[in-house]
Image 1 (cartoon, rainbow, N blue to C red):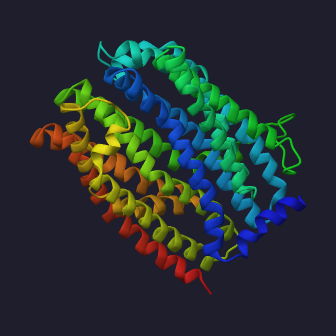
Image 2 (cartoon, rainbow, N blue to C red; image 1 turned 90 degrees about the vertical axis):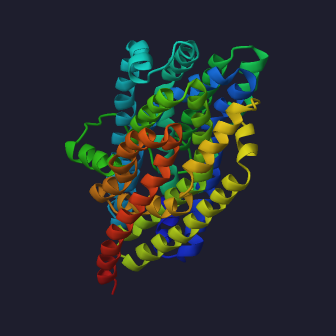
Image 3 (cartoon, rainbow, N blue to C red; image 1 turned 120 degrees about the vertical axis):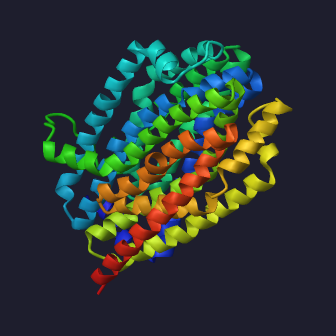
Length: 453
């Protein structure tokens, strides 16, 4: 385990600013590429098919987010436990955690995917509320995505271990590899072969399979002494429970986002049309792109906070959190300014449509992101609790924005302002969540300061 010692022990000794930079920049680059990976289908479909095709790809996003949630439940949960055990010096348990993660990443998403294929039409019509005009596009795209769903869960889930193994740049390469293949295959399948939305789906699952193959190669190479030793594995309830308890917060937040997305689409249909759903799909893609550096930052901070918390170096934990807050706020402010200044240009990246559709997209984008500058504080604070192994607090902060505040607001505000009320619900929920996060972090930082000697 000598190589692992060298790569991980620096997490407890190097300067926080340099360490956060070293771990976050590869994660940010990887996440940027990975976000392009997730939204490039919509961009190509929007330019090469029509708004109905774009609506079809956008409206099935909740199902894809649930697969992502299962990947986060196991991948992030196991990775956080992995980092804490390294910080505690309990290296004997590291590979056991990895083996548990591998099995769980295959079984849990696999069950959901099989059910999704069996009940595909019911999911699309009865749950997602897909209109008759959009149904052929949505069905074609989602069916193919589900075929490769296990790899879309296992690749990112296992990739977390590469970062905490002290190789953030190699982890970044995993994301770049998949995204690069997807970007290359999309125009070939959509335009060259004329497969439309089905071509976008095939490009996605092939690229996800390639990423999975790469991460498995890493853990069977000389790049690391760690191995996924599955043979003879007997799942231990204590490890399974701990993994799921820690990973519960980010997973349930993603599932909540999925459910909120379903509700949001239904409200868009009620007060708008298929065009409103397509416009919100574009806005969601842009918000994902802006928030990507923030997600990469939290991924970079997670092993640093987790390791040092396990090693009882609480001053380094506090300093990492503060550095992350400052950096995250810079990202969100820059993104906010870009959205408010150039909304039409951003919308036009995803569609060649003009007139009513473009105006609707601009209104939705500008309104939905009014409080974007303060969202970084809330996201990083929720991630802080996840990093130190406190899923309850992390879940409360994460779910407050998506469940506690957004759902009642998106049901109430459209009654007052119509379609604009759907857009206003997002910044209103951000404001309420900000107040809660400030209160929770006040007491947590007070507790942490008492531990610093």
